[in-house]
Image (cartoon, rainbow, N blue to C red; front, side, top):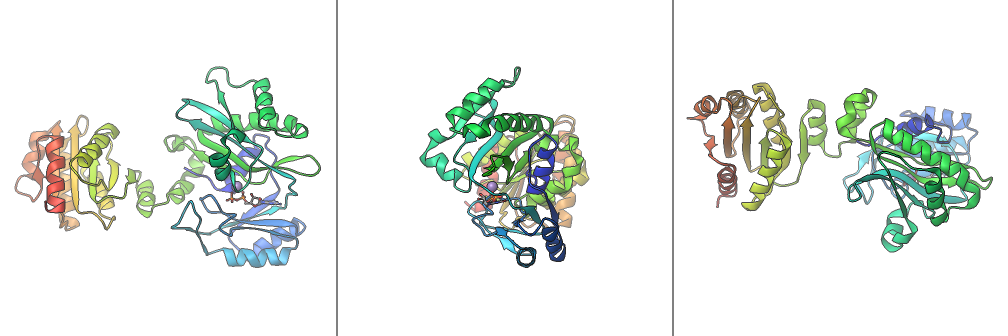
Length: 384
Ligand code: GDP
Ligand code: MN
């Protein structure tokens, strides 16, 4: 779950990371006011949860408050489209920040490296808007240091990395402090990414974060209740946004066969089986343990918000979840939503007999095994 730049900067500044003074607003008049208070030399930045704002026209530098306010007025309410996000996002707020005089731009981040099975520090003296290009054309310019889960990272390791990344000597002491702050912020806020790009070096030799991006592990969201609203906002897909509001684990996959299961493992198996049978899964949806009829109905409703759905596969293994409860939910959804698509259900486990009895006589097609269920839904959905 991504945080906005202003939230990221607030968070990092609490860990001693130097950030420019500034304020966020959704009101153009107030934007002018903030710019005036900061002395007119400001940068106005769209607060949207996507990268590449600079290239998308969402970041502009000013030397007077009035034009800064004018730009804020243009920007608020506008849809910003970038290479990373072709669908775009509407700008609701802008950050007006003190302009940083930039001599050099570095890239510095702490993130989870799945291949290394470690958190790592990533560092480059070639930061700025073209870092993706640097990563592709000059991977040697990007230095990675693993963070030992038990011992952390020693100052000398950070210094070595700063040297091999060719970060100028006058910035190194400040960078050591900054990187240690980033690691602490990363760990304490359950982040999976903390990134500063550009990390600016001013002509006076001061290091300051001109941009910041923090992403927090969704599973730890309950420990960071103040970011709950941002979580729904950060969903790039409207159905995922609705799912986040309903507290349902849903990921849109772009296919046309809706899938509901209980337990992440079972759901992933179901996706594989549908794939193997020649189908295109539309989603990952885990109803969770002990799901009640009302919740099942809510899940079906969610899946049906996707206009591409041609069929629905329900795969339940009842442990603490009672199959009869699930069956009631499916029936209620079928009736209330007036579902016209084929539905195949494989239900097994606690109260499976009762569940199947409830579904008998409805239009739902029963299946004994997961493979059979996948084969049937593909056949029915595509009319093969
Ligand atoms: P992003 O494109 O979404 O990552 O947005 P950034 O906040 O990184 O801004 C894009 C670019 O604008 C940066 O790479 C900088 O080159 C420039 N920029 C942003 N803030 C400032 C600033 O305070 N001063 C100067 N001189 N340039 C800035
Ligand atoms: Mn940036």
